[in-house]
Length: 225
Image 1: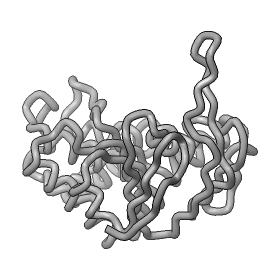
Image 2: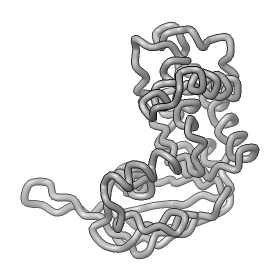
Image 3: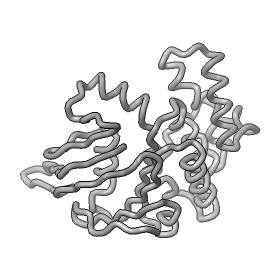
Image 4: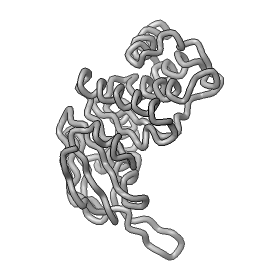
């Protein structure tokens, strides 16, 4: 499903060169739930961004479903991300003037789907996220956990094969975070969606099938929770 071959990523900071990833090789199977842990600056978010085609490696290859991401043209990669990959971030990025339902409908409308079709799909996803009764509320009228569930529904709007989650409970309290993690695990189990989740939280990582530890841009360890 996801394969990284000796992936390196370097960034320029003024005259200095910073190594975010120093040669990572990794395979993630279809339907697997993998948690990525490590201290700040270890390369966790960079790894996730490369898997999602949001950035390109300095060296090495990233393959998703057998496709080499670096060989795709920008427009081809954009379409591939839209169809195959859902993104979930710590900061939810909902549009404040749109209701929960409208926020989930928006990507479908932009994609040219008829409004009725977009509405039906969005309502089904909000049902999956247990938000049926909150679909007509604006983000400011929702709790943090409800907002994150709307974000999850939006991330799944194209029924992606892969969900990439970067600190999805980082700004939530422990009980709300547990609810979100249980929802992500249910989506993984019931929908067969491959999940890669970056987290600092060891308890959150325990929801995965496997934990990958990163340090200084290298995989330090891989273990079962």
